[in-house]
Amino acid sequence: MVVLTVGKSYIDIDGYASGIAYRELLTMQGISVKFVSNAVTNSSVTKSLLNLPYGIDDYKVNSDDKFILLDFSNPNFIPEFVDIGKVIEVIDHHPGYEDYWDNSVIEEIGAVATIIVERYQKCGLLNKMKKEIALLLMAAILDNTLNFTAKITSDRDRNAYKLLQDISKEYNFAEKYFLECQKCIEADLKTSINNDMKIEYVNDIIPDVFGQLTIWDIKKILDNKSEIYSIMNSYGNKWIINIISLKDNISYILYSDSIVKSKLEKLFNCRGEDYLIIKPALIRKEVMKKAKEVI
Ligand SMILES: [Mn+2]
Image 1 (cartoon, rainbow, N blue to C red):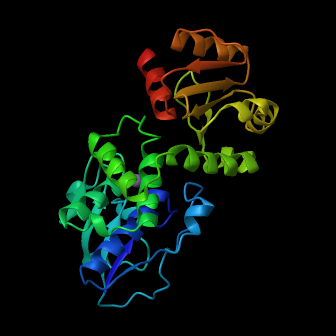
Image 2: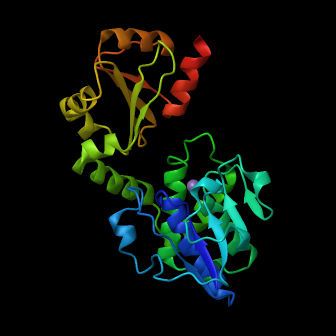
């Protein structure tokens, strides 16, 4: 048996969709394969995607099984049931461990899902892909590329997404998918902010407490500013939070006080009232990088 698996800490939609889609492809090719993981799915795997008639297999690993690792290559994230000597392939897009593996495909690309789409294409089996599988892979590409705005996005991701659109016939899926993610965030703003909180000293420009939320449409969230303030204030009196609104590709940066505000205005060379508006949107990593370059 070939066992596909993902990193042990949590499963995001890229690992989830890639595991399911690659299992279907290998099965079509006559290979016995299961997709196995004990990790929990995070909020990028939405309820409606979890409800599709595909999922993780209930399977106990045997000593003669071989393993394929998807969407991770860092050996620290290998699940306990994987025998590292029996890993036959690693497909990932996080750089750093290319030399560690003999059979690795670690590419600078938006999503592992894109590589899986290309494998269907190479085998001439794209026309056999089910609509539900196409939807899962579309969500993976959307999430991992931040709706094609992240720097890591490549033309391969855009091409794969087009092929998947033709299979699923869903031409308005980005809005649908991200609105469902947003609903989850709005339903429990506190958990969503807590689960994506970075506390790290960068320098005097940026507070240590740096939150981030990725949503589709900013409006409702801004109506709820007071709740965001109270959640962020529980981390201390100096903070910022970057709220990425994908619909308009804008970062809305909220801050704890006027001192932080004026430092950010200087950094971004713009003026804010209750928040800064930055277009195109920046992810947290990019804001930190910009702050480091100043000093
Ligand atoms: Mn990924």
